[in-house]
Image 1 (tube, rainbow, N blue to C red):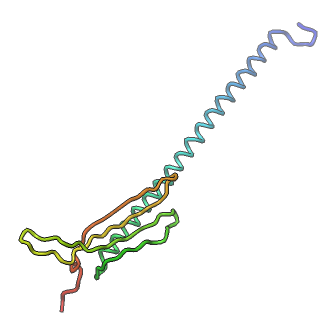
Image 2 (cartoon, rainbow, N blue to C red):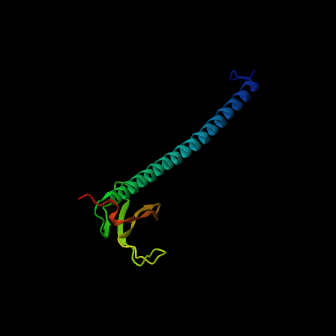
Length: 143
């Protein structure tokens, strides 16, 4: 036994225990950082998914509104940005110069195009829906 009351073998063992504790704490720190990064990315993906779902619902709603309007007229309208910063543009324009196979001119046919634009990580993103509508389709012909 040494003069300070500790044997050399016991002091060496304490050094290994200290090294094991430091290694365990380092490993735990690496796992915690990895978990934090993974959770952060998961949160960003969930927010992006929620934004895209909201954009698709708004596009569908605007399209339904344009299709159900009993009187269709040419329109070019840009709506104010929504809470996600998405700007919607509605374009209704007549399609001219279309004829059937029997050379009958198609009147009152409209293109309806609705565009959503937003900024995602500094890059402009765009989603577009469009359809065609025959003007008299929803008119009241009962007299």
